Image (tube, rainbow, N blue to C red; front, side, top):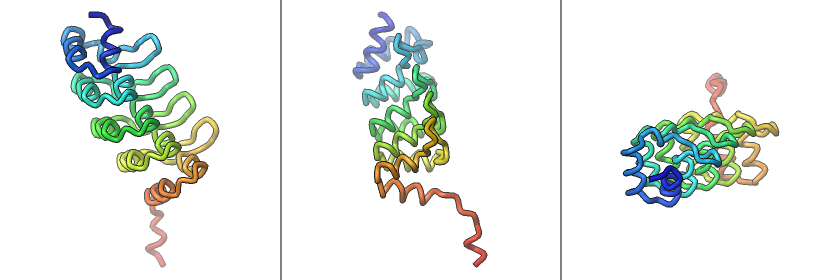
Length: 167
């Protein structure tokens, strides 16, 4: 059994092989392939929820980043895989990790219109004020896309100042 086959199993959903490989090589759960992808990033990006479950159960680092600084959560926020997003967020993925361009996962959800994923991130402490290397926040990206539903979602999560109670 070689490690490249393990990465392929994570990418392609071969749960039996992945499970067997991890039993023999538990440290491989957080290894990176030659392109800098972890098993979790590969499984998430390729929509393999059973593999994601296996990797989480075996101690995968939810916040490991690839060569561009992207996490598994960023990948699914881009792709829109709700089931995997929920798994990662519920398992404690950091919703505020930023990639090499300064963008958090919320920026991807906002840019690509994945409303439910954005809402889960906001419910779990996503900071909508984080700006990427171009100075844009997730709400700026929603505005650029003309996504009214996303803009309304962000507005619901704007912290209250308390001044409205003084009227």
